[in-house]
Length: 310
Image (tube, rainbow, N blue to C red; front, side, top):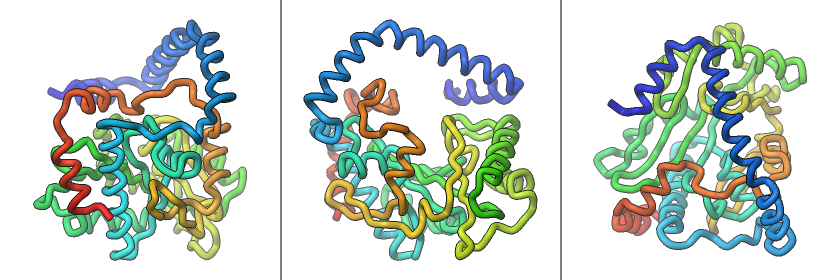
């Protein structure tokens, strides 16, 4: 049985306080290990900061670069399909950071992130077999979010849904929504591709526990937006409508994609000083380092770029 599935099943039976305790213990161990190298890392970071600004770091090379090129072709194909079917999306998380800071991939990043409003996301769920036929080699699965890829390659596009709240953004509405999401996340667990409830069940709980059975505010009235509480493991994302809409065009590896209206403010809120070097540089998803080094995917990625790239 998949080790991650076993861990997930064990976690389902753990009380919330125990899961939090384990998480804090692991975080403490990681911090202790990092602190032992802190002085040397600061020296290296200062050298890089003064001699090589982070936005001037060269792009990846070799097979990681090939995988990134394949992901750009996947994102481009996804964007064309969204335009064809009238679906709105925007670059998010590390992909948005790469677009603003590097005009493309963060040099050591290995996948893509986009987001959609829940209404467009549900339309996409129904259209997946039409837009990305499995018969043509596309693969996708949905749990807390959609993962889209292509057979025989490590290419991956994560698509996360945002919900519209029943009020506009204010510190009080944000506090209320975050408190409700914290309460919901204590009951439900999401780990990797596993979730302790179905997406249908999660939507009912979001409407009941977060939206309080109230109708979402129409877009013309600038509703507050919140990321599905099961989609991330770090912190809740709650933003004003005008921070995302109207969407703007942004350059990513020579292609034009849609991004939040206030991308730099968005990134500053999420990452702080996003123009500085992070505390660690390397594969974001550790298993992909082994995939890049030891798995044969070059022919399939090149095939995808030739067939679907633009």
